[in-house]
Length: 369
Ligand code: SAH
Image 1 (cartoon, rainbow, N blue to C red):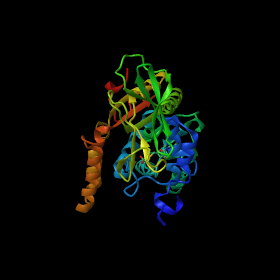
Image 2 (tube, protein in one colour; image 1 turned 180 degrees about the vertical axis):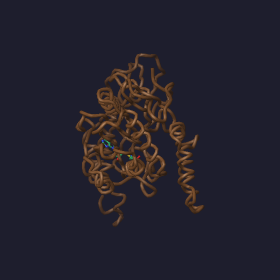
Image 3 (cartoon, rainbow, N blue to C red; image 1 turned 90 degrees about the vertical axis):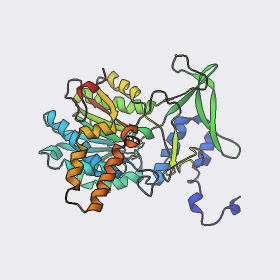
Image 4 (cartoon, protein in one colour; image 1 turned 60 degrees about the horizontal axis):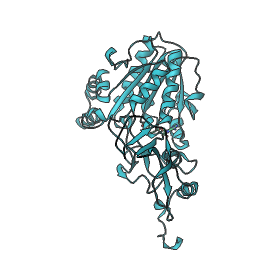
């Protein structure tokens, strides 16, 4: 009933027909629902908004502290020097958001002799909205945009960063039933309300005996992008750093929806909430090893940033600053290192060539056998 809706309440309107489109498609795997809700052209979450920052739905490490991008830059530049300063070299960011990490990274590495001259900047970004912001903020570095890593030139070494990129990629969820594993589907009822149902068919899943009702998550999309990075680095050398919200072994269902910094129902308003889930780094490490890369970690974000010298960097930044500015710099870094929060929830996985030096921020003993 159109007349029942208060006028001027545009904010509550579902994004042009996305819910209707999803309902029309009928029950679909969770992975397809996530892909459509997040990236449907003109209507998905990322097509319609810039979700980052205090006024957005969530805030990420580079938006919290400039030290994050600066130290990732120091790590990549050091790795580049240790590999004999190859030129040309590709710098890729997967999902650069507002471009903040790259701005900090590039500023921090501007004085490394020859580094910027050797770089070609390639950005893998699905959101037209965010591409426009990245193009504006990073214009001086002439970035090229890609829908996928596959189209980036692969005839040279690769330096790659990805922060909170993998957690947005779609996942499948399987549920153990008496008959075997079934796929979790998303469907709509007669009123258009979305919810989970189980596939009537069974699907292949792990063989080990687990209690009925156990949920597992698989992400072919994550494994594919990590495998592609690993293939390139195994062939040409380089370093990839994946930073993300990590899953612990025993966790089952980790799907979460966030709006305005609050947890919400993942199905209430498709296309208007950020959907993500925790990353199974062990599965990704296996995928990368299978492509011939050396894998390090995952280590906690706290360990990694401390190893790279974040406290020294902070002290230098804060020196001579007005107390209020120094306090803000400190609080940002403490948030990144918080052992009860981001410092341990986030982990870092590194990929390098099999015979290349240990990545900055890691120890030789952190190499995955
Ligand atoms: N790395 C940024 C942004 C994280 S949000 C930061 O730390 O602030 C996730 C980013 O990944 C966004 O830029 C989003 O548009 C992009 N993204 C998500 N899924 C993608 C996909 N399948 N292909 C390309 N980009 C994607």
